[in-house]
Image (cartoon, rainbow, N blue to C red):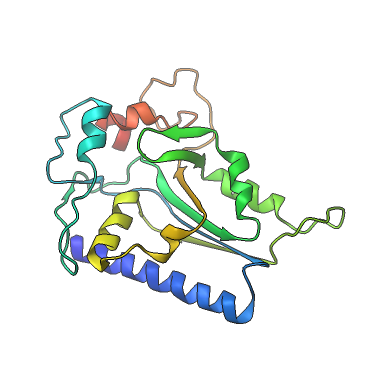
Length: 212
């Protein structure tokens, strides 16, 4: 429910604050990277004017955003589902090595912009492991914070409730992350969970794809 969501987002912010303080006291941003993301989007939270029966990307993208309300009050919103969805989740990163994620941008969402696959987080981190043959600076510490079910609108709800952007929203790396497996399927229009990549067109036009 909305109250649980607000509490969860406050916990995310408090945890990021604590991690940042630890880094600044015990380490530094020159030797530590922090990544904040979600497992998947859940609930398909939309603005109150959204109609799930519509099928055009233009309609979806105009009505999905949450309406900003009064600070300290839950914004007007609707849970369109009680299940995880295939929408991209946010990914924020900062610190030494965080620019490595730019090498993995190969998808784009109509609304959320550049998207990487969740498996590519591991690939980026492996490339940042110490290598005695290289002289480039790599992180001594990599902190990966994965929040269960967090989507872009969850983050917006927390921002509107608090009346300010969350700290991690200001991280220099801001991407979407898809949660699709790396299995292949020749027919990418087929609504199946094993499609090869995140299909933005289907996510914004087909609810069967979105939570099927």
